[in-house]
Each structure stands twice: as C-alpha cells, then as structure tokens.
Length: 111
Length: 115
Image (cartoon, rainbow over all chains, first blue to last red; front, side, top):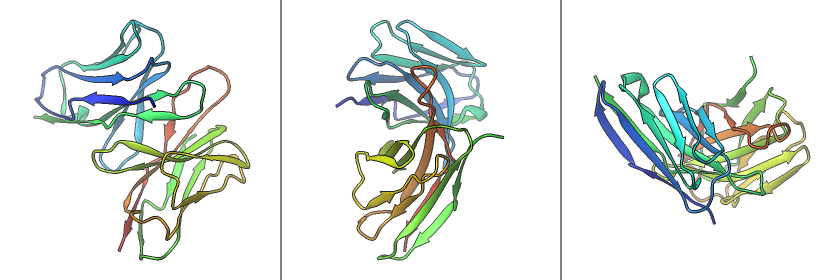
C-alpha cells in the first residue's frame, strides 16, 4: 500500500527564518496536495502539484515535486507567527477516489 | 458562500451510546469522506461515498456507519461497537468531474469525547 512520510515531525524556528518540510511517497505520486491545519480546526488547501519538476508559490510558501514524482517539499521563506500550525501532505491513490495523508509537521514560529 | 459544515463542534458521549455527526456541503461535490484524526497519526479514512446511495469502507470502518441519501449530506454514526471513539473527526468533499485530480475541501471538524 502507498504511504506518505513527512519530516520533520515538528519544527521550531525563529521568526524570519526559512524552513523546509519534506514529504516522501513509497510510490509514484499523481496528485500531491499540501494543507495547513490549525489545532482543532479543519484543513486548509494550500497547493496541488501534478507534474514532475513542478513548482508553485503562494506568498512566501513554495512547493516542489521532484522529477521522479516521489518526493515533495514545502519551503517557507522569512517565516512569521501566522505560519504556525500543522502542515500535511496528501495524495491521490491512483485508480481510486481515495486519498492518503502524511502524519503532519507541527510548526511553531517564535516571535 | 460555498463550503462544508460540520456539527456539532464538540460532542460528548457516554459509553454504550450511539452518536451521529453531521456533515453538509453546498459545493455540489459528488464525493464525500469521513476521516478520523488522532495525535501523531495523521488522517485515517473511515468511509467515503462517490455518489448518492453508495458508499465504501475505508481503512478503519469498524464501529462506524454512514448514509448518503442526498448529495449534500453524509452523516457519520459512531456506534457503541467503536471501542475507542474519542478523536477529532473531519469531513471532506471533492469534485469527481472536470480535472483529473482535485483537492479535497474540509469541514471544521467535530471533537468527540467519550465520558
């Protein structure tokens, strides 16, 4: 079965620092999604990647999918306290309507 | 505004009781999903439905039941057979037409606590 592994599990950074979160799949990814969750709330969609080598940015967040489509990274530039939360990667399971998710990365940004 | 609503936000249940969590969407999405989230375990799929009057078991369906009588509604019942129901429950929906891959939209969640 396909699994998504995220690293690190938790991250504490000083405001203004850059950081990267990784998501690795045991199989080729087709649709890769990044979400952000605040504690006790639902998931907010950030970005979707489909093609090998694809890169998307929104404000200070950049997501990339490697050429082999098995690894994705989420990079935050000049982090702010508003970036704090749990970041999860998710993926389609090919041939089904099911999705799987990583275990999440808990980010804390110190002011 | 289109979106997904879940109610209640907090729910307390005594052991042996069945409880039903509500999920409604006005996004005209075909597929709906229920996930359970426990600390450090990410999201686990309970049930999903691609179309009205049809649904499939996910990875942890035991002790849960669902119905899909209307496109916009996908209620989840947590039965007394679920041995460890205390968790955060998330409902999601997605379109299955149009583009091949579609992101899921999530509701705000229901936190269920068994007393």
